[in-house]
Amino acid sequence: MEGTLGPMALRVSSAAASPAAALVGTAGKLRLFAIGGPGGIRYGLARTRRIDAGDFVVEAAGVAIVVDHGSAEWLAGSELDWVEDGDERGFAIRNPLGLHACGAPL
Image 1 (cartoon, rainbow, N blue to C red):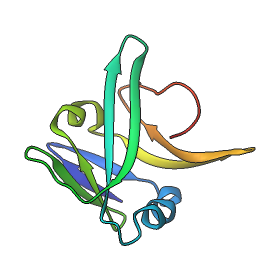
Image 2: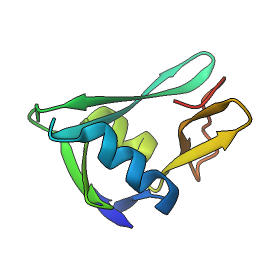
Image 3: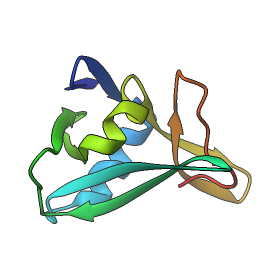
């Protein structure tokens, strides 16, 4: 289940499709972003109704995902996944560029 993000694709895993749809509900869309720093790339996810100039909107697994222009280069080709490991569960980004977030899932 994927949508276009510029020339690349952003995927939503089948495991993440239902939790993403439940998170959005009737609130609108999900905003997925990436921020680079000395410790690597950190990812974030939030509900939004707003689409800014230059944003990409990706329709994947029935969920609209908004990605800002600056994050697009870091997220192109990535997959939004849902992980459950013991007591931890949440969203995770699978990035083919090998740019992983530190710590627990999103």
